[in-house]
Amino acid sequence: MTTEDVSRESRDQSSNVPAATRGSQRETVPGRANAATARQAQHAALTTDHGNTRISDAVVAKIAGLATKEIPGVYDMGKGMARTFGKLRAQVPGSGQTDSATQGVTVEVGERQAAADLDIVTFYGQSIVEVSEAVRRNVIERIEAMTGLQVTEVNITVDDLYVEGGDGETEQQESRVQ
Image 1 (tube, rainbow, N blue to C red):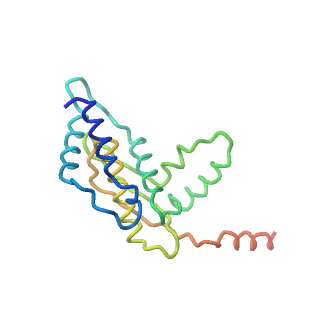
Image 2: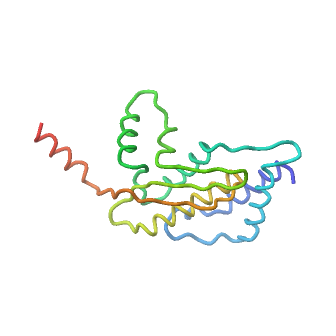
Image 3: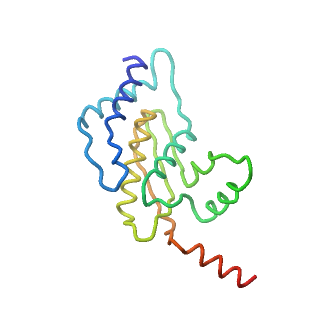
């Protein structure tokens, strides 16, 4: 199987995924056994007669971070101080979106496998179980489809809940004290 065949197979596989799969209830993708075979072919394609493909931890972390943010119910990522510094960094002119995409993401990448640890903030009122399962599924699907690496685990820590309207109340209290 050539690299072009693997790319074509990967595109074909990703086009079979319905757009509605971002919610907490996902439709089953038809031909799941074929998808497993395609993944095995992608794993083998990382090492070929013509050379090796290495995927950096930063690339896998960025994929995991962006895949996490695609899920409704995820407000933000990272622990308290990381989120605070991230907001300050975002206000600095010329700072890119690169750091925010990997905020709250730690990965380990081997030759054929990857594992991810995610720190997320969910909205108050959302089912934490449903949000974290949707995040886990999406992260696994995105990493495996884009890199060919087998994802062994995705550990999720919910660090905080976002309560809508809570930020405005805090600003009013701070302005009275000043």
